[in-house]
Structure formats: C-alpha cells, structure tokens
Image 1 (cartoon, one colour):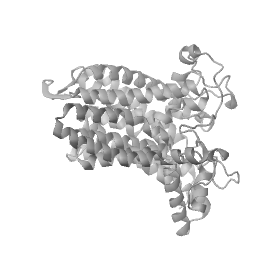
Image 2 (cartoon, helix red, strand yellow):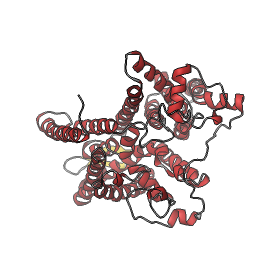
Image 3 (tube, one colour):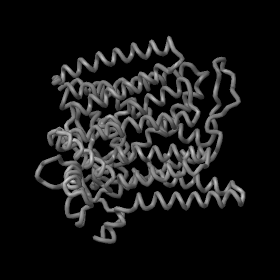
Image 4 (cartoon, one colour):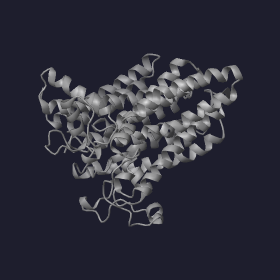
Amino acid sequence: MNLTRREYGVLVILLMIAVVMGAVYIHKRTKKDGILIGTLITAFIIRLFYIMYTPTWERQHDVIGFNNGKGIGQAALIEWLAENVKLPDFDPRTRWGFFQPLLHHIISAAWLKINLFIGVNYDKACENIQILTFVYSMIFVFFGIRLLREMKLSGMPFRAAAFLIALHPSFILMSGSVNNDMLCLTLLIMSVFYAICWYNDSTYGNIVKTAFCIGGAMMAKLSGFLAAPAIAFLFLMKLIRSGKKEAFGYLKQFVLFGCISFPIGLFFPLRNFILFGVPLMYMPEVGEPVGDHSIIARIFDVRVTSPYSSMVKNGNAFDEFNVPVAMIKTSLTGEYDLGAVNRYITPFAWILFATGALLAVIAFLATIRYTLRTVKKMNNKGINDEELLLQDPVIRIFWLILYATGLIFYLRLAFSVPNFSSEDFRYVAYLIVPESLYIGLLLTELEKRKKMRAVLGMIIAAFGVSSLGVYFLLGLP
C-alpha cells in the first residue's frame, strides 16, 4: 500500500487518538498502567513514522549514502562487508568512515544480504537497515525504563521519567540514523542495567551479561567505554565490602568479565593498531571548525536566535560555537534546520528548546542533590514510608560517575576537537536516562508540594508534546 506523506500524517493522527483513548480505557478499567503503555505505543509510532519519511541519506552522520559510487562512509563500509564477507584488509584511514568498530556494520551487512536473498530490491534493502536502528531505539527505551524500575521509582514520577526517555528527540532521530550510534548507546545502557543487577545479585549470569553488553557497546563504537568507570566502581566496592572468601569469588568473576569484554571491545582497534599503526583512539576531524572562538566565548557567549543549530551553510551568521547551547540544540533537533522543511515546525521547536534547556538544568541540579542524600517516598496520605530511594551510597555514586563520565567526555571532545560535529550530543545521549531518573526522584520528593510538582509535570508534558509535534510535522513538508 503506497500512501503519500499527508496520508501517512492522517494515519498517524488517527493512531495517536486511538492510543490516547486506549490508554485512558486501560488506566480506568484495568490494573495495568495505561499511561505507560500509551507512552510506549506512541514512541513506537513516531519512530515508525520517522523512518518511513526519512531516507538513508537524510539527517545522517558519516553515512554518505548507499550505492553512491564514492566508496566512503559507513554505508559504503556496510556494502563492502556484505560484498566481501571479511574484515577490511587495508588501512581503514585510506577510506573515510572505515575506521569505525564493526559490530553494527556486520549486523547491517548480514541484514542487507538477507533482504536481497528474499527478493527485496537493492535500494529498498538498504532502506530496510533503518529497521535495525528502529529496533535498537526501542530496546534502549525498554532498558531505560527497566532501570527506572530497578531504582524503585513508581507512580507519577516513574511515568514522567519513562515519558522523557521514550519521547526524547535524540532517540527518534537515531532510530532512522543508519550509523553505529544507536547500537552503541543501547548496549551501553544494557550494560548499566545488568551491572546494577549484578550488584544486587552477584551471579555469574549477571556479570556475563554485563561483560557481553559493554564489550558489544565498544565493538559498536569506542565511546561504549563510557560506562566502564561506573561499572568498575561497583566491582571495586563489592570487593572492598566482602570477606576473604567472597573476595576470591568476586575476583574469579572479574577475570571472567575481562576475558569476555576486553577481546570483544578492543579486537578491532588493536587489530588496526598492530597491522596498520592506527592509533587506538583514532578519530579524523570532520565538520565546521569553531576553534577560532575563545574558550570563554564557547562557554558564556550565548546567542540563541533560532531553536536550530546555527550554521553558515544554512544562511546563519556563524557556526554554532557555544558548547552548552550546541549540546541542548543537537540533543533536540540534531544538526539540522528543520524549519526549512516545514515552517510550522518552528513554534514547536522553540517550545522543545525552552523546555529541554530547563529540564537539563533541573536534572543537573537534581544530580548534585541526590548524590548527597536519599529520597523519601510518600504514600497517598503524605506520610513518609520507611523505604528510601537511592539509600545505598554506592549506587548514588555509581550514577554520579556514569553521569559525570559522559559530561566530561563530551566537554573534552568539544574543546579538544574544536569542530561543530564534536559538539553533537549523540555521543553521550545515554545521559538522558540518569537525567530522567533524577527528575523522577525530584518529582517523588515533591509529593506534598502539589503546585511545584504540577509545574514540573507541565514542563515535562510540554517537552514530550512538542517533541511529537516537531517529528510529526517533519514528515509533512
């Protein structure tokens, strides 16, 4: 069935109405969480709509395009692997984009060959690679929500935090981006989930899952290592707190963890270093240079004339050089002027930018607050329950390390490689999970402060609705 974009739009609106009605019915008539189910279905629909109207050469990073004859970029790497069925036997620096770890590209090459085998034409088979990134994005949401549950969030704070993760624009954009970002982030957040499971129940099964996930995250992209410091801290604290007999058992588990994660995660960069002398953290410079601005300007010179990233090539006066502004803008609308596609997007984009910036500041302040103290849960009468959230200081510091590692990595990359592309939030988009957790904790603490809680709830609702508005209208030029 071939539908125009506007027909797709009508279909999506009808589906959204059905989702809202279904969520209300489920919430009123059954014991199941209709709001959460409605949020997940909405996340599924907007991603599906996005990959339907987004071709594999549009709003991509380092992809270039399939079947373009240039032989460079991550699309060409997928095609090369599908055609040759072996690892590249040449210095990857000689073909732009081929230096990336290969897990996503190997999976994509296999998926491409399966599509061709069952009779899908080549162009459509290449487009179908977005099905993989779509699935990765939904798995990310699933494990992000499982982490919220593992941290004992419940009720309205849990739903609000899940809403932020499910409808955050970063994961809508990356659901259609056929590069390796989404797989890396998904495996990274899975490694965080299984590491916490291991901390609570130190079985071989949980540590093996953690090892495969973090190794796989690094095999997808080296920035998958960003979860390693926080996980190492959990391991260390478990060892310090144990007796001699338990410590020996933990050491055996750590050896197993290393034997699994290190070979998986470091195989390709070590191979390239040994065979071709490629530096282990090799990354070519790419994107518009912004290094002619001072560090002071890149932090404090805030110029917000548009909700989209400022780019000279788009007719703007300058390339986005302010790091905090670039971080927020790229997390919401990528590196693109979406208003050029559909002018009705811009009002939604302004709301998205304003609420996104406000939530980022709130999450940062909440991070500091809840690293230092626990959160009291309340019952319906406003009386303190005995249960405390984040009562274990090890878990509080674990989340702080995870958050700080991503933030420091992002800032170091943005300043050490002073190009606009280095300011893109997608490298550390997993931070949305701890940010959502901290906002959920704040909502929990505001149980008795109804007005403040309502205001924060409205900001979150406006953020999610404007996100849907932007990426719905993007398909209706």
